Length: 301
Image 1 (cartoon, helix red, strand yellow):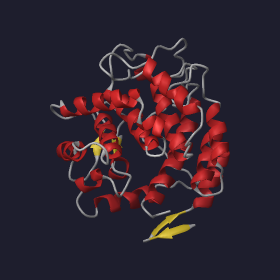
Image 2 (image 1 turned 90 degrees about the vertical axis):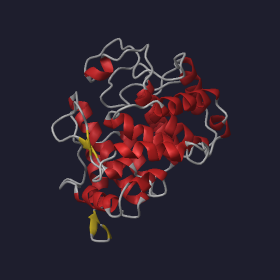
Image 3 (image 1 turned 180 degrees about the horizontal axis):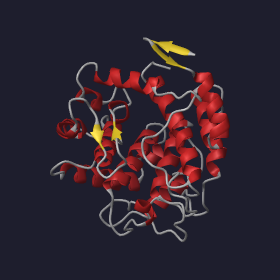
Image 4 (image 1 turned 180 degrees about the vertical axis):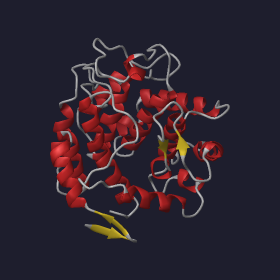
């Protein structure tokens, strides 16, 4: 059990939960996070979600059950590629080509592409308009790509990433009114990821900060009762510009909340509904890895 500043995080219980109740991919991701795994094994597990077109599908996004490659699955794949520090593997060029082929004329990615079989997928995925660019999806894909670009020149020089970055900056700059909670969350993640290379990123973070309440809790409009995004999710990296949006003690208190939400079975829960029995299980495994990653990034696990 790891104990920091009064917070108890039972890493062994978390590992046991993931072993019994998570995807093979998340088991290997947790092993890598805890220093007992190997990047090559994580990448091999990721390959099970890959398609011949260079993209990823097969429920890599748990509430998107179709086999087809999807932008949201590309986001999760990039997240894993960053964690595994894939500096020269062949998966990345193929994925960049896939992203380029599915970028719309304005430079953004659609929220989702058509599915042959929507059974088990959330209605918002199954009913998405593939002809309209989504800032929510483009910003989260591009954020992980920028993190990968820090260790891969081919990503840093990618025409797709340049186009996606321009789309996100322009869309964020046009915000009027209060954005949806998830759109705000992923826009901030994107700006944090580009802050070292895009001069206007810090100013845009400050501009978006006016939409973050003093307590840092963003209710999710249209979500399940009580569903909200919280400070540790909005700004998981203590070095990021978005961390400066919060008053002293707000993020620290939320990290204590996150640590305290470890369940008796060792895992963490999510506060949003799942749209299939498989997704309900898979989201808990993903959430458990994510909780430990955030706590570790902040020196608390």
